[in-house]
Amino acid sequence: MQYFKIRFLLALMLCLPMIALAQDDCTCCTEHHAQFDFWLGEWVVKNDQGQRVGENSISKIEDNCIMLEKWKGAKGTTGTSHNYYDSSDQTWNQLWIDNSGKVLKLKGGLQGDSMVMKGDVIKGGKGDLFYNQISWIPESDGTVLQLWEIFDSKGQLLQTVFKGYYFKRDED
Image (cartoon, rainbow, N blue to C red):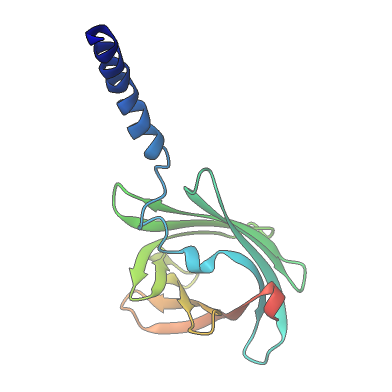
């Protein structure tokens, strides 16, 4: 009988690390990785006048480590972004590339309930310095407001490039 108890305890000790690993095999299933989940879904995007300006599909890939955006504009523009939480510096990051060759690299994080990401300060054609900032603001009715703004290097708003209201596809 003692022999079976020892074998059972030995087998249990060998299995415990595997059980612990099985419970922790989703590296990107943390509360930080879920901060931007309010943007997940199939969306119809409208402007201030209620006109449809595009559709957007936001999903998680690579075991929840990347949020993949697939944009289709009403006038034929398309674009894709990868959004990810970087635990090494505790920031959210976006790499956007569209069918005109525009590339945006943004970094930021949660500010209150909103996700806010900014680009590096860059020099414009006239030598002026500016940066891009995109904010995703979840509304109480389940919609999301996305603002793409350009600021000068001192933080003064220069231009609103895009203001879109996201409606779940089945709710438009």
